[in-house]
Length: 206
Image (cartoon, rainbow, N blue to C red; front, top):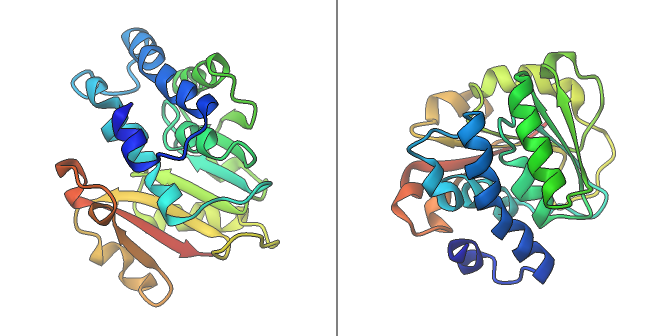
């Protein structure tokens, strides 16, 4: 938990309680349904929660913003973001039912009321959202292709509606065709831990 407070010292008491509860909940669920690799579960806060919250460094979602998390797995980045932005609305989608169930149970246990969950493929989803978020789900081109139809027209945030995704490694080839409109963020500019040296955020207005 300390690592979250290090970078987000402004958290309310309620938010601190919710983030603190994630450790026990994910350890418990992970022993039944493997949503985080066994060797990585002890790095939950740095590798999963803090990593997810890099999106909050890119954009602070305004109240009423609708956000869809594509390929949420056990709830990342959706659940950490839903705690951070209690007045935004998050839809967490995954094609694997048991992962959706874990995310749903965790959110319920910490009292998140601004989330809904869908066991579906994004290709099937017709609803519109102001932002799509994701964490290393698929190549950028594929992601853009399936979510472009889901971007709402109405704007209310500091950045135009679009896609914010978290990725690792060399991305120049992947974002080449979008280079005129995409913004690339080095997470190491915000987070000093070694884990983030190769991690990046990509924002793409759509």
